[in-house]
Structures are given as C-alpha cells and as structure tokens.
Image 1 (cartoon, chains in turn purple, yellow):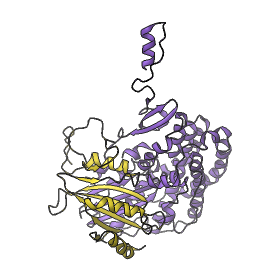
Image 2 (cartoon, helix red, strand yellow; image 1 turned 45 degrees about the vertical axis):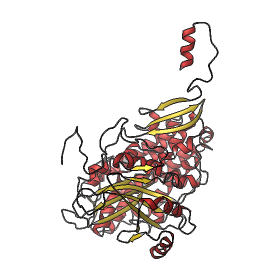
Image 3 (cartoon, one colour; image 1 turned 90 degrees about the vertical axis):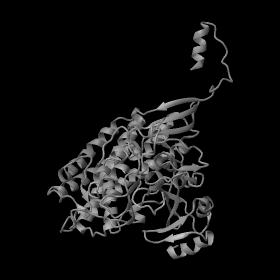
Image 4 (spheres, chains in turn blue, orange; image 1 turned 120 degrees about the horizontal axis):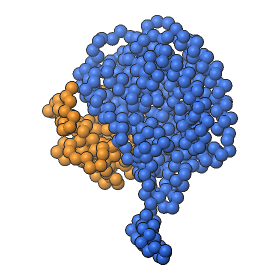
Length: 385
Length: 158
C-alpha cells in the first residue's frame, strides 16, 4: 500500500523501495465474510508473505444464534427442532443425536421400525450432503459442470424427503421415542429408483472429476494434516479419516442398527486434500450399500414408542454422539430433573475441523487455500451454532 | 482399560482425585491447581494415552442450588489407541475463575477454551491467544452463557 503512495507523491521520479518499514514484508488480506468460496459467512484473516501463507485466523460468529442458550429455555421435545438449523445439510443426523440423548436419559426403547427408518434417512442425508459438497468442491477449484450433476441427483433425495417429512431442508422428522410420522407409501419404490440411478451416476462422477489430471494436480500434496495433528486438533469424520485416523462412530460405538448392517470404514493414508476427497466419494458408495441392505427389510410395527406428553429427564449428565456427514457430533445434556435441559453443549465437528485449517495452510500458497477449505467441508451454522 | 483399572491407575498418579461413576463414563474431580500436571500425565502415560479431547465445556451452577460450586469445567477424553474414556471435572470459583490451559497438550483446546473464555469468563492461564472468537470485537459486558446474563437490548423473557 505505502509503495503506491510513495510513487504517487513523487510523480514520475520513482524512489527506491524502503525496506525496513513496519509491515513491509507481511500482507494481511481478508477472505470473507461474503466470499463465494467460504460457503457462508466465514471470515478468514490471512497473513501473507508474497504468496505464501504465514497464518490463517478464522473470525467466527457472523451467524451465531446462541443455540445452546436458546435450548436451555426449550423443553425436551422442542429443542430438537432448533438443531436442524445447526448443520442444515445433515438435519436428520443432528436430530438423531438429540433424540438419542433424550432416549438415553429417559431409558426409552425405540421400536425396530423407527430404528431402521432412521438409519435409511441418515444415510440418504449423508449422500445428499456429500453430493452438495462434491459439486461445491469442484466449483471452488474451477469446474462448474459438476455442480449441476450433483444437484440433479440431490433433487431426487429432496423429493423423497419432502414426501415423507414434509420438508426439503430442515426435516424435523425424529422425535424422542421414534419418528413423527410413518413412511409415505411411495418411499421404498422411490428409494430403490434412486439407488439404481445413483449407482450409474457415481461412476460418472469419477470419470468427470476424480480422474481429471488438472483436478489431481490441484489436490495432491495440498493441505497436509498428519495423523498426530488430526487427533490433536480433534478432527473427526472424513477430515480425520483422510489422515488414516479410525474414528467412524457408526463402527466404533454403533447406535441404532449400525451394528446389524455391513459396511466398511473408509480410511485413506494420503493425509492431503485428495485423500479427504476420496474418503467422501467412497463413503457415498458405502451409504448406498447400507440402504440396499435395509430398504427391503423395514420391520412392521409401531413407528413411535409411547411417551408422556411432557418429558422429564432424571438428574444427571447424558452424552450421545453420532457420525454426521462432517464428523462426530456430540450432544451433552446436563439435567436437573426439570422439563428443560439445565445446560446443553453441542460438540460440533466443523468447529474442531476448522481449527486445523491454520496448521494445514501455513507455508502453502494462497491459491491452495480454497482446495484445503473445500475438503474440510465447512458448514458455517454448524461452527457458530 | 475398564473403569476399575482406570481408577487404580489414576489414584497412583493423583491420590487426591475423587471418582464419580454416575454417568456413562468414569468422572474424575480434580482441583484447578492439580490440573496441568495431571493433564500432562493423562496424555503421555503409556497405559492411559488420552490423546483425543473431544469435548470441552463449562457449566454455570450459580442459579438453582447454593451448595453447588459456581462453575465446573468439563473435559471429555478418549484414547484412539485403547478406546477408553474419562471425564475430568474441575470446580472454579465465579469471583475469580481461572485454570491452566491445556492448548499446548491438545491443540483443539485452543479454540474451545477461547469459546469458554468469552461465553463464561473463565480465564485460561498461559493461553497463547486468549481473544474473543465468536462474540464481536469490542464486546463489553457480561458473559452470555452465564445464568445471570441479561441482554440489555433484547429484553425478551421466556
């Protein structure tokens, strides 16, 4: 900045650049809060030296709604609906964590039918979320077409959700003790149609993006996060599994019917952006595999356990966790025996994953930052809560 | 290790630890003065190896019960090697809440402690970068997650 001013002041006579002026080497730029590549209102203050990143400082809170404080005033049936607005791309899975935590406290038995439907819905959500990520990720690094491909298939999932849950984004379908309503009669047929279609399309995705040499060059060796760092920074989900940290909650601490279905925990050893990308692509195939096993085996019976109109959790502390599309979501409820939680804490996966961005970005070029951020799959309302 | 083995091992390291098994996992109460040295042992001991801090938060008890402590720090740990869990709790005084930081042992604590600092007003000693994270710059006044917080602008009471 000062260099230009110096030139302007002196007119045509160009003075030599002064070296030891304060801040001469460093350059601070702001990315966001209104930047298309940050997928929401994330504000990064980046200190640069030339093109090399010296430091990345996230400034959060542009979409902070204080959901934790809000939940202290809502009863155990109401607070679940607020959590759909945290990680809006995996609304079902957020609701699952909260419903499970209340069920744990109340010692409610959830009917088998509800458990199976929950898992199918969770996996459909995971596919929808990963698809949006895949489209946006490719768009971040310059390929526009994949976005339309991804949204074309995601639309099918949204249609299935709309029929059964009545909403396309914040579904609010899970209640403590089961589900809010039974499945739509078309559900099984539509899901099967979707599976047949998606199996063809996922190979198309690979042809379009994964094997592309420009794409691989942009992603390989970028944003290295070692295994030790991934654990130390509390990373979870695909961000950690790309660094070969085994932490899939579905596999390690199974909930619902995840212990009765066959699937693999996807681990990659690359530790870079390409590894994290591959984890998500392979996870979509596993999700399809899980849905295939369950879609014909939905047990008959009740979809909701009988519960009292007003729920009261006994005094104590309850913690439940699930694997969302982004990683480990924990719900920590401290109850004093009332109808509302005394204190509630959401351990959101995005918050911890974002804290590793500084470690990943230091020493790399500014142009690679988007390729790193894209594979962390940040959803800002999930980070700010 | 199961809870009994963990208890024996932790009593060796810290004789003053108080155990509580009411929750899902083993709860350990430590004093803020013992915390830092105990945390280093938790991370570095070959048999404990708690390398994954997955939840760090604070509870404000001030309102309902007088006999309870003012603030409680809660740390949830697990080990990626042995898959055992513990919960460490430490009670703080609300007039001068302060505890040693663990952000140099578990990097994730850096952000989580900054969140607790602004929301609850807990002062983390020796923290490398204790600034506001979520609240806007220039935020003045009380800590929003405390039970006695009242918003001067939006006076909506439920």
